[in-house]
Image (cartoon, rainbow, N blue to C red):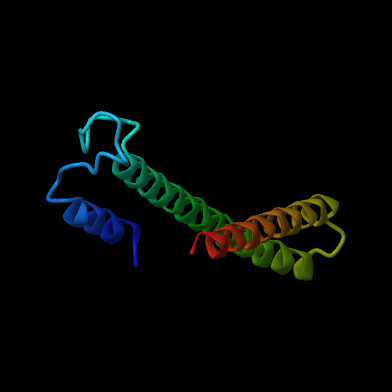
Length: 117
């Protein structure tokens, strides 16, 4: 069940939108931060926000990797024609490091996503 589905279920099942006295100090379903239902809804919304942020960061890292791959191919082609170009060799090394860093970030984000799912 996704977070937004769980939120809807909580809202549906919450005693016809009234709090259960044992779970809420004020009797107010949505206005009281101490209400168990309100806290559950807030936690689910926060989890969905985290998942969305991770997805966006993963996409950004993947775009960096794709661009770095194109730069790597360009540098390798230059080195075929001019194998003594130290500046191109240095650029190639930097691009490879950038790819490695972003691939490591993607893997880390995927691990976090697995934990959240």
